[in-house]
Image (cartoon, rainbow over all chains, first blue to last red; front, side):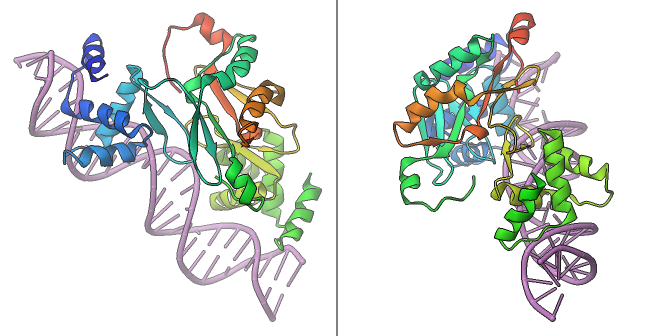
Length: 144
Length: 144
DNA sequence: TTCAGTGCAAAGCGTTTGCAGGGTG
DNA sequence: CACCCTGCAAACGCTTTGCACTGAA
């Protein structure tokens, strides 16, 4: 996918820099990562990368369609590569386990809203709730 | 619903204060509001309420099950009263219009995840995408 | 009278921005 | 060699926290 990177940047008159390559690579390798985690990963190989560069780069990569983000917690967003199959994130609010589902699970929802002309951004969807394991063991409480 | 307030607070050994009453009332009247909007609304009637009290109170009210929150933007969360019917929020990323849908639209999703023992928190769901009006008029771009 | 709740101020976390120097194309 | 990109440091928006005082029960 890093091949796309050079091409897509060029299309927009943007430049290919080592930082951009490393950041995209980090997102691909981590599969799901916050800006902070991306920064840490990049720094584990090269020492000098700045947090603001990570933010600016993730923004660029998202505009180029190479990465996407969702909100899997009330804190920082999570980025993932678009080279993965599109998927819906399902998050257990109790144990914080994140599971990916095939977009088929939301097909009826997409269809229902589509009837009103609304186009759902499936990749951004995060469904919160309580997973089977937690529901089994847990007292009825505790938030995100 | 403010009757519930006194009762539920008492159950937990908590106290009924003017601030708590006003904050719950604000959420009910505004229907969808960020902590900041709640603060402004409360201050428009009484002058002295502190932001940290709003945050602390919204947390308490949510634990008591009197209010709920969702994330309708990448910024502050939105609170609403649980005295409204449960609904799913659908947000246009372009014009930021928020529309509420009957939970029926996600019934198939709830059923599909339910098959795996996952209990979906329907009230917390926010579906992002592009509404009919924007899709009609807009160039294919622009983020949240 | 007790202890939960409040206001205030400071700190915290994640993110953004202005600017000057650096490196890509 | 133009101009995009980066690092740095400061600022920012939202939220949380520590502490002493206040007031509900």
